Length: 242
Image (cartoon, helix red, strand yellow):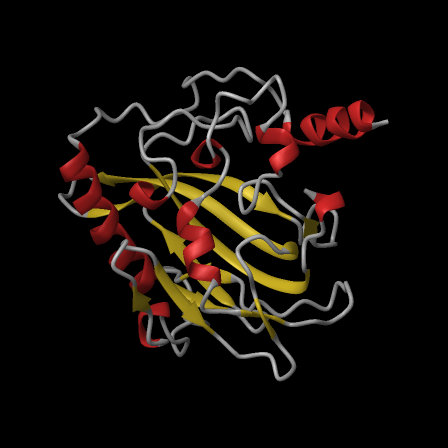
């Protein structure tokens, strides 16, 4: 029975064991120091170029319409930059919220994307090559439960398949760090979502240039992540869930 559960845990992770960089931006790779500075500048520009809609989804300002002229850019929501470079914005604090522990079982609704920060032909540093990392709003309409990119189970790490891997192979450290500043809403799963805010993770606080689990056909080398989310509920993880 234990072998069956272990197989299911690994199967839930294994979208594919191989990945290619064919989908990656063709922009020439810069030094790590330059990439880190690009990430920081691109985050600042992203905060200027986007705003929250009524449900907290991130929308880009349009240059061709005027209906968004009175919207407030993300930069005006008092974004907080952590020493790691992670930036977060809290839209609201749940009245009955619960502190999110590092190994909690999460139920998270989100529209989250990943980007590469590059220098454009006009000399501006910006996010490019957008790719959807997770979109439970338009996909299932229900929160994702217990994602390994937040906390990978010990049963996976000790399996024959991944026994030589560490947590950093699976987990996005910057997301873990950012969620410490939020609380779960502790409400039932519902399509009536209201995003709590955003966590922007520069590549150095994600997978940087390290090997990582293949969450999709994309390789996340040099990629920053923008998590727009609502944590519906958390449960304290039990030994049986680990």
